[in-house]
Structure formats: C-alpha cells, structure tokens
Length: 106
Image 1 (tube, rainbow, N blue to C red):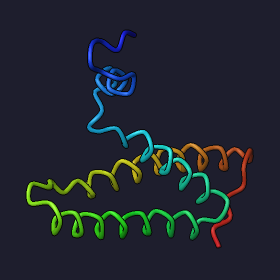
Image 2 (image 1 turned 45 degrees about the vertical axis):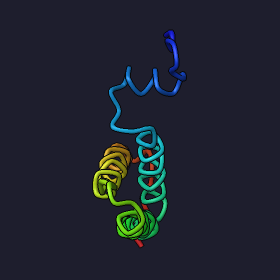
Image 3 (image 1 turned 180 degrees about the horizontal axis):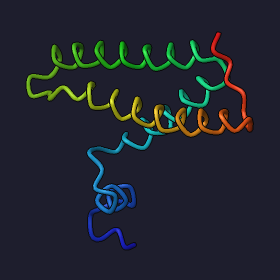
C-alpha cells in the first residue's frame, strides 16, 4: 500500500478503510476494552463507557468555544465506542451461555 506523494501511511490506511477520522481505531479499541471490562465486572464497563461519553460532551463544548469552525463529532466518537463495546460484550455473553466464560453482573 503506497502512501503516495505528500501522504503518510496513516492517511493511506484511513483512506483504505474509509474511516471518518484518524481516531476511529482508538475509539474501537476503547470500546472493545469497555466490553471486555463489562464481562469481568459489568458496572465498571458501563462506567467507563459513560465517562467517555461525558468527556466527549465536554470536549465538544470546549472546542466549540475555542474554534469558530469546529464541527462537533463527540456523539459519533461515543457511538463508535459503544457499538464496539456491544459487539465484544455480545460475543462474551454468548460464550457465557455455553459456560466458556463467566460474567460478573455485580
């Protein structure tokens, strides 16, 4: 995968994956972590995901005050993480139905 003139490898990967922005993969990883933590201790995973959502709201408000042309994207960032957390937790939930893993609900 050639980066092309004036483009970095990150830009080439972003274009190849058709990602919205460079931090999408970080949101997916954080969502996966939240899903895995939720399987270990369910309230902790939800708390981590909620904290991420609150931080995104704060970041959008702060950036809107500082930059006139800022486009709020915190809701999309939060949904990316929440969807990945749901996918990971759903897989672990199905595995728990077969007795392969154990989810601590509280």
